[in-house]
Length: 463
Image (cartoon, rainbow, N blue to C red; front, side, top):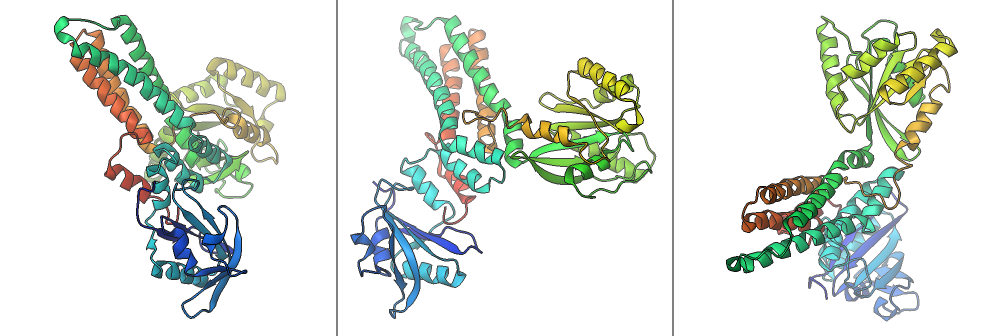
């Protein structure tokens, strides 16, 4: 059954295409369309079989043909929204689109709000809230990695994870509630060590999901890669080599780069946002100091860090330089021994082996100014995430999900502490209830109008 008695209409395609799509959804979708559409045989759309294309004409009030179109009706509940729907494919002229839409609105349809089609799909049980949010991510995806993340979420992989987590919490909550019902008899229905183990497992699950946000968000929006190192190590030359163009100024004068330069590259379906930074050194130059400060700011936000060093640099200095970056957990360091032409092959190879062993990080030997020198690095980066991102991978990439999981971690931790400290059952149960409620917000089993308004308000009209 439809959640609304109104019929909405909107253009669902962007400007500039040869073909446009106009959608209607609601109880009057077909009858509204019948006021303006007739097939070439003269039959209304209501006479056509569901899910079968009909070729015909859209006419205005004067009977003049506006456009020749293809129209199809979908019968509830077998449609995207779960309601009766109509999709009209017309020519991409903005005049034609707006004229057809105006005719439909004059016949009784209402203009759709942003995201209203997907919101109706959610309210009608065709999608849960996580899947509905994935629709927006799918539309915005601009790489194979971000597309795969959105598809995994849309297919319900994330929903299954959240539902399993909530089911575990509900089982735990039910045991605690049962004890509260018999509190006067001083009965314990579950062994405390078992409850502790279950709650610890749930907390670890929440931690794992929340901990994947850095990687998931990076894959969704492009992996931030900071190119760092001392002045004149070849950072700008490396960026130019990766871009295959002279984007950054290259000079023998130390301190040439005084601000960050950022460019995006798609490597094997994953977008990397390479950031060329000012060389790290002590300087009295005010502008260069500002650039170095920005270097450390970008360094802290980067997922991958490329430390560019010169091959002739002593090994212990390179290792110290890596330690001085003070990278945090989750950041990946790759060391590049640049200017390989200034060292012998044996010396460079020995240095690579030693650094790899000492720091347990990938090391690449290259000469960034030479054509093809960065091929091995590009291949490595292109496969770094692609190889681990399968159709079963669950990586949190949505800020709302991460925020809820962070709060769920707080309440679950409080419950575990209360249980460990031997506090009364009602205090443990309260924290578990809050955690159940939070996880329910993820998939929309528990929602509020404010949450829905925020989520679907970010969609484009017609979706």
